[in-house]
Structures are given as structure tokens and as C-alpha cells.
Image 1 (cartoon, rainbow, N blue to C red):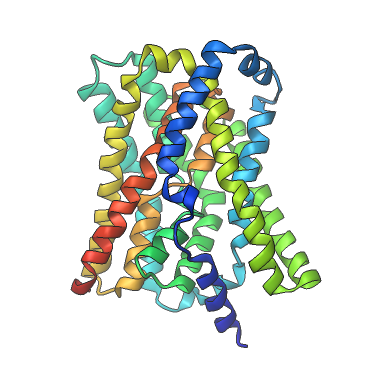
Image 2 (tube, rainbow, N blue to C red; image 1 turned 30 degrees about the vertical axis):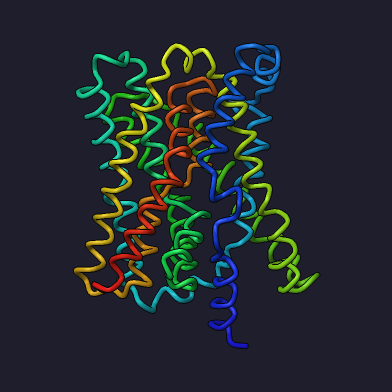
Length: 355
């Protein structure tokens, strides 16, 4: 079998229908919010105790859960797929341009406008700053794992989606910290540069390297079929479980803030929803006007519209703390993403005939 055929076959395995947990992810997130808030309110000794396990401003229990979330997605990626970059370059230019030259700046501008102008009387200046910071962390990290689902549901080219994700992950390692530092600096938000770098290495660099090395080792030891059909199938379940338990912990730390300000979740969700539709529209229209085929255009737009929320949550916790408004903003991103992205998949499928 040729290398190109192997990549195609692997990519098709990554594309799948939504699992039961994925399909109703927004419901599970909402339930975790309720459980977490109740835990923090009625059994505060649990979050208080877990909150003490920190090293270098990193909460150890949450860090472990986030590794569970991130590692399975990293192990799925075969970086041999980058060899296909030279073919169909337009689709890559669209996803790179929308993700790194457009998306973070629109997120910052949109949230700054909503938080400091539209919602000015409803949110304190301190929380305005925190929510903008969380939005920047979210908007500067393109999707890594769930985009395979969106691509599959919109009949995207699975091999090309794999290339898009792999190259974006490499760019993420080098561009995330400068972008976040620049945008937060514009807003007058001071963040420790070293903590940002540590967070990216901790939650992207290490899982990426571990995923690659374990992939190479296990395929050599057990074979590619076992790795894809047995190993990935088993560890894939940890992503959702890690996410749900992380949310319970996060909201147990944020219980008082949410009870005192329940409206804030809605106020964060409104600009996030507008942002998602805006980025999708820009990338999708760009691809259409450039004459890119639909099977490449749809995933290119979906990667920009969705976010690597696992990383955003982890960095928000490391930089601003588990009970910060920044952490809350990134978590609301999880709540919003699934229903909004499913609506964008529907739009992509309904407009396929125009490509």
C-alpha cells in the first residue's frame, strides 16, 4: 500500500459519526456545571482540598485530567500526512490565514466591544478583563480533535483534514504564546510570559511528543490495525471523561461566582456564538471565492470556527487560576461549541451545491 493510501485510510478512521457522549456534549456540560456548583456550595472541603495541590501555579488534579483530554487527539495524528502539503495549497492557506491572521483578532475585538460597551453595566471592570482574557486564549487555539467529526459530518476530505490539523498543531507551538501576549498586552492585561510558554509546552508540546512516540512504538510493536482499532478506540473514551470531570472541578471552584452571577454564562455565550458564525463565514466565503472544492472548504472553515478548548482551559487555569473569570469564559466555550458547530455542519451540507 502506498504512503498516500495509508494516510487516506487512517484519515477515514479518524472521521466518524458523533458518539453518544459527543452528540449530547452540551447536556453533559450543563449537568457538570450543576454538579460542580452543588459540590462547591454544599461540600466545599472537596474543591478546597484539591485546590491546594499546586506546583508552579499549575493545579495537579486538573492538569492530569487535561492530559487525559488532550493525549488521545495527539496520538491520532500521523505527521507523515504533512508530506501532502504541496498538493492543494489553497485549502491550507485558507485555514492558516483564518486561524492565525484573522481569528484571534476578531475574538479580541468582539469580546472587548461586548464586555466593555454592550454589557458594561452588567459586569464589573475586573470581570470584563478576565472574560476578554479567556476569550483570547480560546480564539488563539484552532481545533485539533473534534474537527475530524465536523469534517466527517460535512463530507470533508479526511486525508486533507488530517494535513490541516497536523500543520495547525505545529504552528500552534510557535504562534500561540506571541499571539496571546500581543492581544492581552493591547488590552492592558499583564501575563507572565514564562507561564504561557510552560503551559503550551505542558499541554501541547509534551502530549504532542508523547502521542507521536507512543504511536510509532505501538504500531511497530502491535501493528497499525491494532493501534487504530483497539488502542485509539479505548483511549478515546478518556477525552470526554477527562473533560467532564475537569468541568465538575472547575465549577466546584467557581460555585459562588456562578450563583451570584448566573447571567454571566449567557453574556459570555452571546459573543462566542457570534464569533463562531463570523469566522466560519469568512473562511467558507474565502474558499468559495477562491474556487476551492467543498470537501476541502468545509473542514477549512470548521477548524477556524471551532477551538482547542482543552488547551484554552488549561492555560486559563495556569495563568489566571481555577476560580478566575478567564477560566469560566473558556469553559463556556465548551458549552457553546457543539450545538453551534452542528448548525454550521448543517449550513455546509445545505450549501454544497454552490461549490
